[in-house]
Image 1 (tube, rainbow, N blue to C red):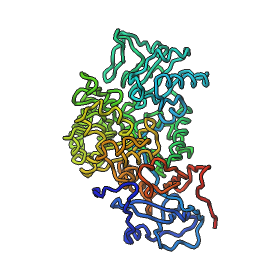
Image 2 (tube, one colour; image 1 turned 90 degrees about the vertical axis):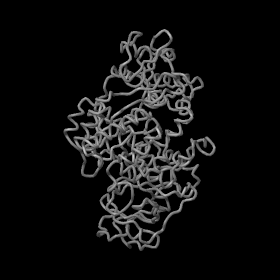
Image 3 (cartoon, one colour; image 1 turned 60 degrees about the vertical axis):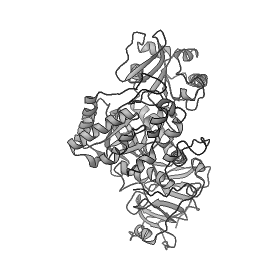
Image 4 (cartoon, rainbow, N blue to C red; image 1 turned 135 degrees about the vertical axis):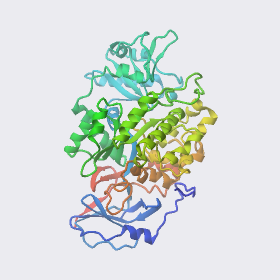
Length: 572
């Protein structure tokens, strides 16, 4: 599927093909109240995933009428003309794996991302507690002990030292571990006698006493005590989240697992015309009304702002918290092979129910054991249900045994991956896996060379939602500080065109929306982004610095960076 040109961010072979542009310039309807967005430095992809440039875009009622290449004659009159002032225009970017509610809640709680020590994280919690005396449960997310000099899990004792008698509950950056103070554990009845649930672990000291950290399903022992947010709280968090996501150039996101309460909130926002971006929601298989939601079938509104045709299943935990299920012991923790969230029969039941209902199945799998189990389950159930065309996915596909890499293409399974995970995990991944298994981890090139399509995302709020961070990681295999020099296992890099496709047409394809989204072409949605610089004309190391000037969804501007020089309207 992919060429082997080895192109980099500063050396892209862009094709100016007359036949290709002619395909975009088909006869368009009468302009009427349409919009002509002119004087832009435009890039999109053609059917062969080659870059095509354009200088103007015409759209009516939220759909593209025509894309104008260099030398094409522009209409003399239009219902509305907008001067792009030479800004770079690209199709709207799609995040194929994020958590919309979680991102909103993170924006409204203690931000622990980037804290470089347990003490700094505690201070952030103390500052938040002092500023929010009305909050009953102090919550936050983003701590990562791998970034700390101690490299050790935090403890309840350090939170207790704040002197606040309210319960405190703080999610790890990957969402697969959480940190509690003693008050939270007391409310949950946690003691030395508490047993580890299936698929979870309570971290304990040498005397067997809980230290305050809970892994995977053990988190529910405490989180179940937190009052459920009301509808208005959920809607507020979703709205805050979507507005923020639009500011990073995202016009569509695949929401990776939400239950009935969140679906109802999205539906209300949809009815209120309050969805600034498109949401392709995966129904959480953990939802108590899972079977009822499946029985309702797919949902799709008239404008494709909100769709449901897939489910999210979780098979294991995360690598950083040693919850990812591995075929062999962790290299830095002998005797530990991680955690599986479900037994074989329960996993098959959840998948089979979805496939029989005509739903795409998207399963979280990070460790090589979990990935193998999911691939084995898909092989059995795809044959049983005849559902290969549903494009079932593995979310993350992070650590793969070599023997399993070809199976994605053989089964028609989509690896839905997040390129910034590699640059965030590089400081601990080889410690966890050792020098041999790391060769099958974050293996984008090995997968692409088998002919599969990779859908890219960020896994926000675990990673920053800025897709240009993901593009940068995909092309350089470096973090934002340019480390390591030359890239981390650089042989697994994507070309910039491949990375661009993974955040546009390939993400759309993985969500069954390639006929609507992912490129700018007649009949597709007028979802596009204006940028402050040309990502195809700068060194790859600068990709993460690209800034969004404006975001448009369905021909309507949903974000504008007021401090930047953006486009100006010129009415006819």
